[in-house]
Image (cartoon, helix red, strand yellow):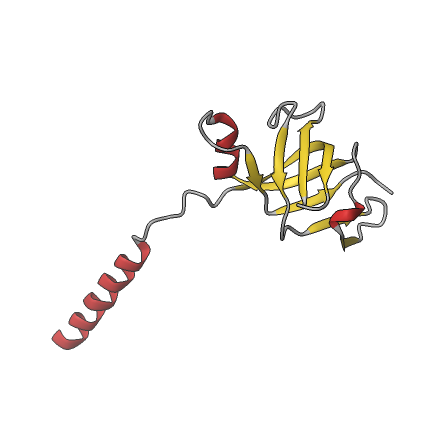
Length: 126
């Protein structure tokens, strides 16, 4: 009986320690609307501004889109497909999935403004 109690106590302690690990501060990813104002296809960089509904990016924010998946969702059919960066055009409306830490760069005057995003979705319908 004492041995079982010790084993249960030890397992409980290990479970407690594993649940006390640091939670990542950067686990929040949100979708933000924007409009493309410039495209650098060579370096895969987008310059974006806010669309009329959101006020996150201002009139000029730079998104580093290297190695970032770009998708298109046909709103009529619901079909989602991966597209190339070269399919994006100036004036396109996009939705970017961006982590909280990247959004904080927008409010930090000392930080560089090249934002890294998780995913870009073309929301302009074609």
